[in-house]
Length: 375
Image: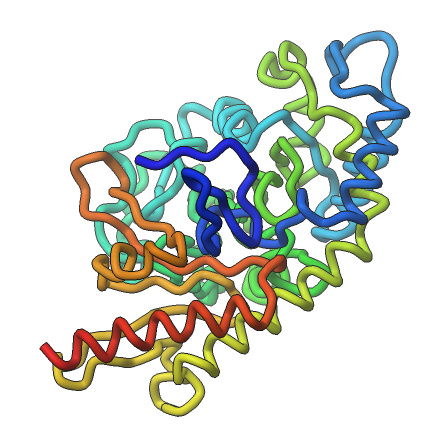
């Protein structure tokens, strides 16, 4: 396993060799953006590097409530509470929910929102959706809590939420959506998945969003966004009162950097479009409609990449591509969910990449495809 002594961005330095970096989850490359760095330095000048106190102390920093108010408006939720990690936010939420409720977990939910691993649905997301009516009908409690991701960041699968409209009215239902990989890059102004959820959400169903904000937004923290009653309950939780908060300088930079984020989102979406074009994803209308870039015609119906717009992750079942491109490009390729699993291989674009980077990547990908075809 290679190591580096610098923060990866457009590129990464490994053993003195600079390579293009197509991995990680810093989708906007925000911590390498000079305008953001300047705002973060300003924030450190005001607040220091860390706030060594509890959010429940008798002296409060106003920046926390300012950021939480901004996020509640952005995400169309009554209230938001910030935590020092996405994992802490998830665990605080799960521990605050009723123990006697009946829990239903979608596939691939993150350990941050687990109760017991064996409860996670082992099949596909569509099969889980089909199973929901029977699972809800068989619930041992009148209160049902449904926990799901907003998307699958590993296999680049977009989830549909039209099933929300069919949730029964004879149960008290609470839906928890982990939008860690949507916040900051999907939706208008980086609102994430919320706009695609709201049209299907019945009035009798409670919705709570949870997730890390350390990916696209680059903030070392997490959030819970939902009803005022739930947020007030969480403020009394030891997960909140006994933990250090997000370093306030990051929230200062976040509030000031909205134009920086938007510019980076626009750049990232252009890089996604360019990569699709260069590797041929726009040449095949059927493949494009199905969010796939096809390839390797001599190898049958194998896919080159699966993706969905405008998400900057391109999953490939061809794990050997990582080794083939390693002289110039570092891809995301590692066993998941445990060390004995098969590798999950992806190309992850970020807003720091330029057009030439995408051309170099695309040329290497196409050369790999041609070599495979000729076998």
